[in-house]
Image 1 (spheres, one colour):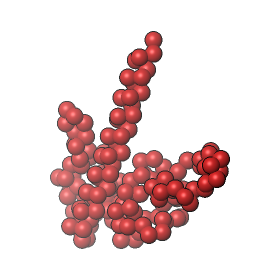
Image 2: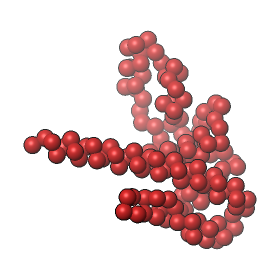
Image 3: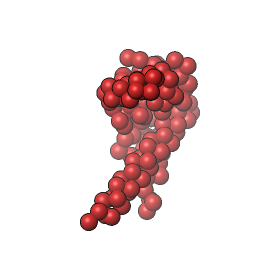
Length: 138
């Protein structure tokens, strides 16, 4: 397991979402070849491009990550798409699993939820763009 140096609480929580949503980082051999062509290596990239292949959850975030996973089917939606987690279910699961430090866990869950919504929105936009591009090719 690897953890980014200087990783903040928010980075650790959003990194967990990235890891859960996208799995371990893909093979970076092509990226390494491309960078080498310009005399660079991965260390020269911004941190958000250097995702670890394995992700370590800090011990203090274990409860919130487990709660996030347990709530993975509890998204509320509107006509415009997903809007967030169903907090009635979140609170019920917190009771069921006797989550301590509920306020902190809920605040941390909201960080993860916001990042997950961003990822889902980006994915939906990419799919829309692909559909439009495919529709233009006849």
